[in-house]
Length: 360
Image (cartoon, rainbow, N blue to C red):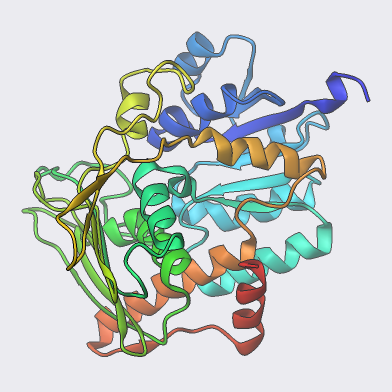
C-alpha cells in the first residue's frame, strides 16, 4: 500500500470554538490524517493557520469532493443531523461533535444510515482521553474503592456574563446541559453502566440567561447513584470526581489541562502535553489518605483511532450505540426537568443489549 493510500483526508465543517480549539489542532497532530478542507463563512483565520487547505463557503462543495474520506462536523448543534446524513450519503466517514444530535429519533436515524451506507459514524467524546477520567477509571478498574456505589462528576466554569452566541441563546440544542452534559453522561455510563431512572433539575441562574446554565442530574442504578452537575457560576473549590465505594473513597480535585493548553496555543504532543500534577486521593478506613499520580491525558488518541477505523485497522473508538445511550440520558434529563419527575431511560431492550455488547 502506498504512503498516500495510508492517509485519511479530512474535511472540517465549522471553525468556531470547537473546530478551531479542539478538532483542527488534534487532527493536524495525528499521523495518517491530513486536514485538507474546511467549511466556514470566515476563511481568513483558517488560511492564515492552514494555508495548504481549501476553504469552502458551503458544505455541499466539500461533500462533493471525492478526495475527502472523513468529514468532521463542528457546526452548531441543530446542523449535526442533516450534515452527518448528507456526508454519509456522499460516501464519507463522519465524526460529529457532541452532542450527537438534538434527540434520540435523529440519533437512531443516523445509526441506521451508517449501517446502510457502511460508513463509520463517531461522536467526539474526546473527554474519554482526559487525565482526570483516565485516572478515576483506572482506580475503579483496580478495585481501589471496592464496589462503587456513589459517583459525583462535575464540569463547572465561571462565566458570569452571558455571551451572544448560539450555545447561550434560546433555541434547540442550546444550554449547559447540551454543552457539558454529554461529557458527564458519557463518563458516568462508562464507569457505572446504564441507569434505571434519570431525575434532573435545570435552571437559568445568570442575569440575562436565555438557556439553562445550571444542571443537576441524578442517575439511579438500583441503590447506586451517579450525580452529574454542570454550572457556569463556579469559580473553584468543587472536585472533578468523587467516588464512594464499599472499600473506600477516591477524590480527583483538578481537571484535565488539555483544553487550557489548546487555548494557549500549545501543539498537541508538545513537551508537557496532557501532564496532570493533581493526584487522585484515596481514602480508606485502614490507612491514611494516599495520593495516586494522575494518568497523562491525550485526546490525540481519539483521532488516531478514528484514522485506524477509517482504514479498517481498528474498531470505532466510540461505538454509535454508546453515543445513543448518552443521548438517552440527555433526553430523559430534559423530560425529567420539564415534568418534575423521574424518567426511565428511554432505550429499547435491543439497544440495551447492543450497549452491553459494545462494552466487552
